Length: 334
Image (tube, rainbow, N blue to C red; front, top):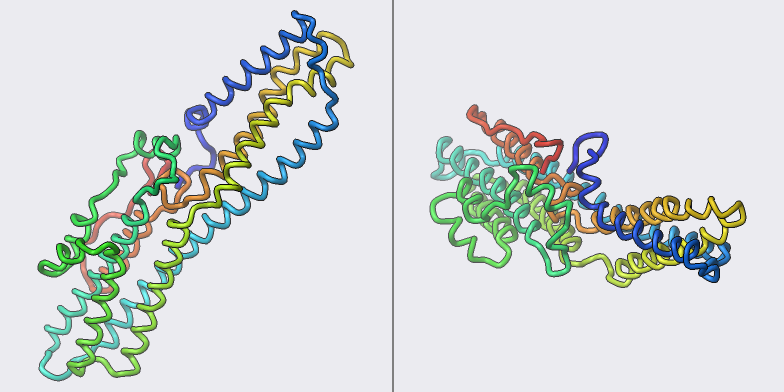
């Protein structure tokens, strides 16, 4: 996520220079043919082109709204995960009480193991969501900026969860196709074990089970966004329509500007470049917002969220040696 108010010029030019160059060269060629080669037939009425521009604007606006909905839903899901993480920890600390052969110190260790397993869970989910799908752009400039401008690198799932899991649990869970889902399964087994030992009342076990279920629901919502791409028919034709508009735009502008004199025809070049670029940027914004887990500068800052959850949970365990919060690097926070 980009954390500053304004994007710096060098960020903008990295994704804008290629289309700007194409628009400039293309409109300059058309204008020179009109003025110097006498190809006056190239001038077209502006009204149908303006009508098409309106249609493209509506289409791109629809795509951008849909993309933003995916992005905002992803952020709400992770907000819910934050709240559920805190609730689960409070319930584990308060609901598990001495009973049977387990004394206070043994229960304290069980609580620590379960809370640390939850920290492993959120980090496993984060790393799983950042694995690229085949339809995601491997050369996305927004992802390249994160790679080049920040130290945030893709983390190894096994090494990450090893920090938080007990004994050889990490190696066993790493072999699963969906490690995060199996971490929740282990939590449910552990809660049942505590119930069987007489340390959790039945009603309180049910309450804890509801939180596990809610976490599964939020994980499923993340996976739905991650695994179901923005419909290709909308994404493809939005980009196609913007380029068609950019292609025909100089012809309509020449016809309109020629009414004011030959000198005004040269304004076709800057006006065509500017209008085409505005539509192109609108298209890029929608395109780069549709996948909020790609590790680009517009994505959900899951690394920061996971670290904040970890700090909150470990403070609830009265730990003092806590990791530092994740701060923006070059105004980018992941």
